[in-house]
Image 1 (cartoon, rainbow, N blue to C red):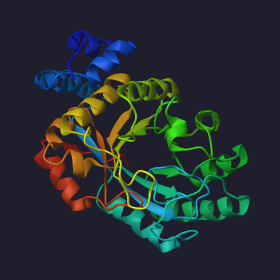
Image 2 (cartoon, one colour; image 1 turned 30 degrees about the vertical axis):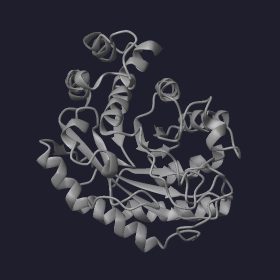
Image 3 (cartoon, one colour; image 1 turned 135 degrees about the vertical axis):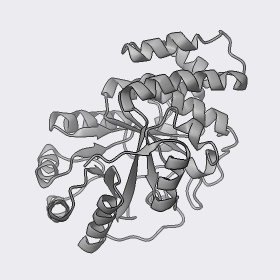
Length: 332
């Protein structure tokens, strides 16, 4: 796709470095940038990335602590109530699994231990049980913990904060306009309200999205504008992996070329420059062999998989970061 107006790349980088928001037209120009201008964009974006994040990459692992039996109908998710196949349901993993993963994170010098729980709402008893697990984990590992756990009440949020959860992940996933196309069992506004409550309770926020759901480029840009307004500490960018049995198992992912994925990641860095920009699900599929370019924008990745989908091993991720000329980031 050709730019209708030529993007002033140095000006976009200047705005980002000075905390000024891009115009919507500029954001769309980033996503529509011709291939031959991609090296120029990546060099400019690397200036922003280096200013805020240096030359280091944070590697994180993700524990699927509660799986399946979800009441929501998110079109991309294998744990959705409407998915025709299930990765296996369990209420809460044994404490030993969390302790082992926390030990791995500390032993390998990883930056963060992320914990995901399927479902949208939880009883106080379930939160109490999980909080006890977190306390035990904190006793044996000084890992920074990020938890993806749906909608919480303020009281439940305080319990998890007191137990030692540092950051909560709650993705917007797509734009406000497109959201009803991927989920109808809760609303975009409910997500925004939940994030505001969590910030009031003192949590760091991890908030990102998924690209490749069938959205337009305008939707991608609008999603990043909304994420920028939230001011999260971390922005995970996922590229859709069509999972069998989900509503999007036959989604057309041909637009997810390496070049387009790099432009999406570049826009995330320009829009939310001080946040951790994480290339999450789909990295190993759509950007394999382009890691050095990816790290011009990205300072964070996952290793060992994404809840229901496998991924690069921790050892291979550490090696890949080093071979790309970057350093693994230890945050303990």
